[in-house]
Each structure stands twice: as C-alpha cells, then as structure tokens.
Length: 140
Image (tube, rainbow, N blue to C red; front, side):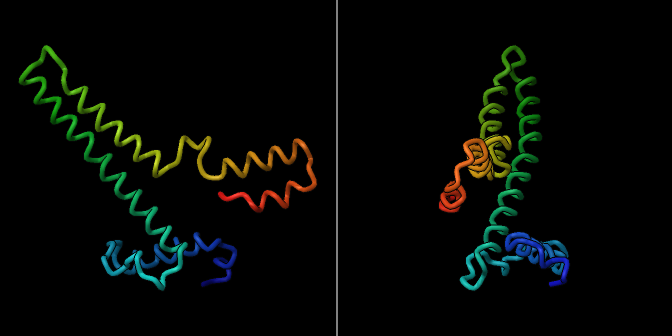
C-alpha cells in the first residue's frame, strides 16, 4: 500500500485490492476469488458482493432491450392490431427497476447515509449537547 492509499477507508482499500486482482487476471473474474473465504475481511466481501450485483444488473439491462425488441417484432408480425408486447415489457421492466434500486439505492434521496444526514440536521437545528453521543449509537 502506498502512502497515498493510507487515507482510504477499509472499503476503499478493499475495492482497490479487488481492482488490482482483476487487472492481474486480465480483467476476468475467476472462481478462486471466493467471497466465502473465512480469512477475507468483511469489507472486501462487501465490495465483491456489490461488484457482482452491478455486473448482474448490467447483464439484465443489456438483455432486456433486445428481448423486448424481439417480442415487438413477433407482436407486429402476428397480431399488429393489439400490442400485447407492452405487458411482458412492463413486467420485465419492473424487475429491472427493482434491481436498479437494489444496486444504486433509492433515487439518492433516502439511500445510503440519509439517516445520518437527518440526525446531523436535527442536531444542528436543536443544538442539543447530548446529540453527538446518541448519534454514535445509531445503526446505519
């Protein structure tokens, strides 16, 4: 680890380590980089899980559009008077949206550190002296 990397959080260091691993293996994800390894730090397991979720989302999103286009062509060739392709497109689209929320958070507004920001805002508003001590007890 270089001196520049010393200021990184544990999760950022794990992400950096994972990136170096992928570069060393020509960018391919090998089965030997197993997140179930008991010796692996939890932050590194979290990074692996998030990278896999992101990869699966991109695979799903990339497969959605060609499939809907294919169904649209079938729909237009077989029954152009009724666009039934809307129903499978909505169903699959809902799944893609749910997966995106899981990967990227809920539109940024309530994702990630929303609770922490709200507590800090309320503490500043009420200028409560004991607020800082209670804030540490909040599970994020």
